[in-house]
Length: 445
Ligand code: DLL
Image (spheres, rainbow, N blue to C red):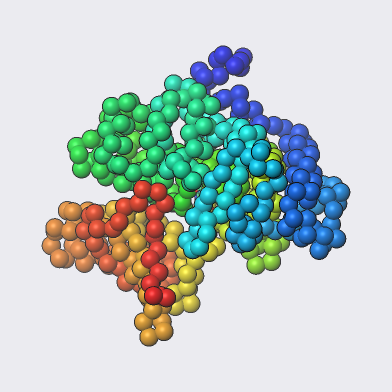
């Protein structure tokens, strides 16, 4: 029988905090509706922007009677957070806010997000559920290489791991030689970082004669940026670990919005706290299950900064079946792209993840690439630069040419157009310590 004393010995990393993952659906929907009503009330009473948008639509919180009624509520956009910078969307007085984080956009001011003590407890609990779903438990030694600071990754994973009862190493991002030393000397069993940074760590370890397969490391909790299943396979094969995908965003809470479980087939959304919708990005209308659209999230329990119907710009689809592990919460496909990641080359819509899948299908490529966009005589041009192994590079010109042709073919197969592919030597492309920069857009320089 499951007790608080023995959960740690159970397979699958169950933790008492994970109980809501298995709620019977009628109970879950009832909980969601109660929380939705409360959060709409709170936002209406305390957030001017939300109240005025409701009033424009002649809506009051009393109009929310069912979960379906959510579709009458106004969307929230990232620009709303920018326009009300820094504290305009807060629903709690400063005396109750115990933490601020910020996410730097590519331009201008960051967006600021706030947490009450209760919000931090919810955040830690969803991170506990994340780690447990990935099979981690008390006794694990977790190297937390997400950046500590204004970024939500570091502290979000930190408190989750501590609450789980694991041993946390708060190493933050960067300082790769120390990361590898700690991983080896401290007997690290799980690591948290971006997938691109882990690839950099694997490479550094290999260059220094350390085989990660010889270490106790068994799991990676990777997120904060899009990555593909091909990338997962490379990581798992080379490092001998299980690589799990975790998803989140600052505006909603940080990491801990959704996670893979040991089934590694889609991400379970912690929908008792974050109500998900998937909508057609052009019309805002709901997409049927299995059809791709934009993920829209509503925080159901956030106090300091409730966010209603946030347009994430992340593209995914609901899975049609519940997870075989018994979790009742809805699952989404891995988020491989953002609607604003897309660029158009010769009339064709291109997403970086499509290029990644094509590149990694060819033997001899390394998982380091960049897409360079330029404009020549008014036409957009795309060049893919990809690292190949030193063996290929030092080989005869013919083998280089053959790999280059295979890569151009693979990209053409996916995109339907032929683009320039340039092979570069190992270590040429800049390594990231956090989110990788895959596209360098020089079109407006
Ligand atoms: O990246 C929070 C986080 C930290 C998530 C650590 C996971 C691990 P932001 O900096 O606000 O927050 O960026 C959020 O990153 O809208 C997605 O576009 C992208 N993203 C996050 N996780 C994934 C993922 C953190 N697993 C934005 N797959 C989101 C694809 C992801 N994209």
